[in-house]
Length: 163
Image 1 (cartoon, rainbow, N blue to C red):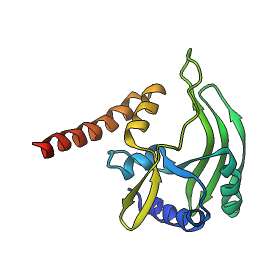
Image 2: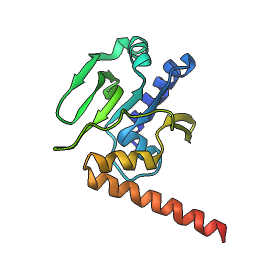
Image 3: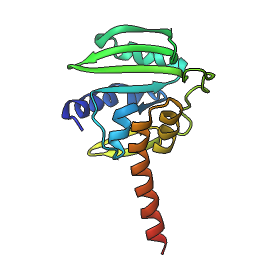
Image 4: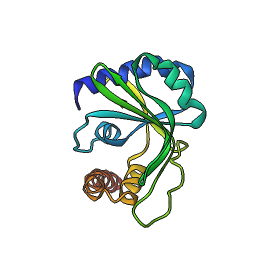
């Protein structure tokens, strides 16, 4: 994973973690944190509608686009953009996705978030299986296949350990 991304994650944790806000790293950075072979160029954060504006206030010195409700043909959510030391950070709440000709998904949920250790960081993330389901629903097959490789490997390890 890009060293700049790691530094920004550490900075975000230092500013947000002590606040007891509900949030999780999602998207490509989450996938890379959990062992998926994918490039990361930005950080996506999922939070609640209540907390999105609190996080915006905490990171206000980095705002490039204030949080507001945004909808296009594929996504709708509360959405804001930040630039931290050259790394783009996007924050979302009440995220829903849609493929052409389908209905909107349920709002992305944070109740299944888990905490993982990555180097010296403890990070809230969405489990790989949940990310896999989301990427399949969005029609992002190539990324879903990369996630499936890690999930299959994990399942194989579990089976091997049992016998």
